[in-house]
Image (cartoon, rainbow over all chains, first blue to last red; front, top):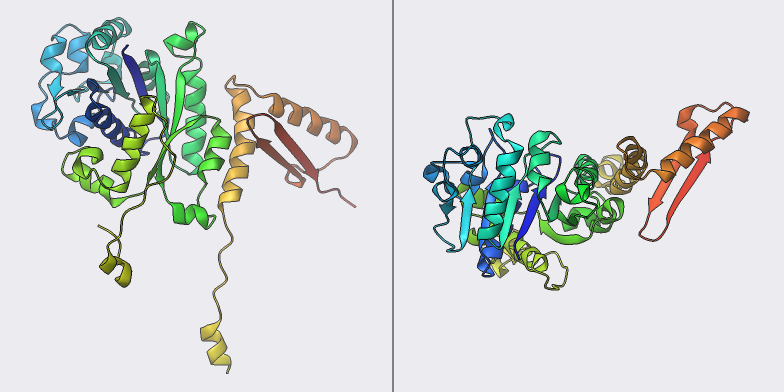
Length: 271
Length: 85
């Protein structure tokens, strides 16, 4: 059974694209066939995070408007065999995405892949609504910070009203993914705790991704963090989250970077 | 000695800010969920209680503190007033 998952947040810059790439590749490493779809028409970035920016020929808009076949637009990942990317268009705007063409495309993707992971644009406008439109499940990416939590709450409302499932009286299964979490700051009372965010949003927790310099390092070289440095704390956290998406029960803990002895002695930070 | 105590004064830890964030969000979201059509029973009750209070005494809105705690099974709301003497 194929599943469509939207990665959404309302607020920009909280880690939707990073999470799409990391979760998509982690699911593929678990043996599933996965396509990650960039819905951010006009501001595409998933291609860059996946390291495929120079291989884009056709895009989402071309396929929905029948200017190209799906197989012409899909880009196969060079590292993971069963991972594919459908890039967004960079030169068009979100109005170019039409609902009929999108419905047809999603049907085609469902037939071809186990998981269709949709990277939503920020905001609550048409582009974000279309990205969640066909979703079975939603990953709500939230930073432990007031504006991000507020926007996530808004997105949860939209998932319950604007999706195809909601219109049929069914539910989109929602998962909370807390990113950029800093355990030390939360411990000092300077950052919302995981329990605080869960209690406010009332969405079950999928995972907690610790704040880490590995995320920027991975994006610099165009690799999902799960592939760039599989043993790093965020990669392990994304791997755990992916396994939970697959229905495994994985103990919830926040991975932290392993410090070597020298770094510990000199108080340096782990690489 | 005074210059020493000035240097050695132990730093007071900054008060924690996360509880403030949490409370602000709870109040705000109970309000906004109503405006966007999500369940807002608590928000409606809050408005009604405040209206009832204002019928008897006039209190400035900054004298009213509303705290909402949402849990899975139950939610609680505490409204406290700074009453004028």
